[in-house]
Length: 175
Image (cartoon, rainbow, N blue to C red; front, top):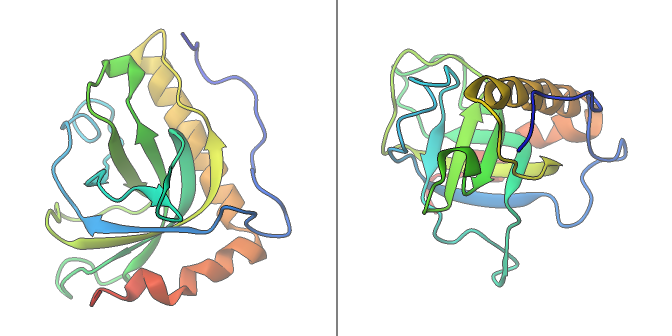
């Protein structure tokens, strides 16, 4: 069990840019999750199906917390600020909640006026923040997620990572 967030670096990943196996590219429609992100944790998530979550078509992606960019095929009236946003995401079993199903939960670092279930989401994952943990309390989990968000944002602000915001994969919704 993990106590509240301990001191850790405020950036992760090489200053020279993403290292193998990154960047990873994933895609899927936004689906309903467990309903905990917005309501219980006050950290909304956009979930995609776990199917197809592979590196190079064969190796399963390690459970843990990652950072990168999310592209959303949003209707023009949903959000006028753009279609590509920084994100942190969890891939795993969520041991605090004792899930029996592995999930992909993406926290897009942007405030949206409404839900967008069914919208295509393309992800470019640029780095690994930390492994998946269990927690002693919901408050400790929330504190660690907030720290993950700070680490993800700080890591993406570096030039070698920021350039991936323009990756054509993020806005190629015709695949």
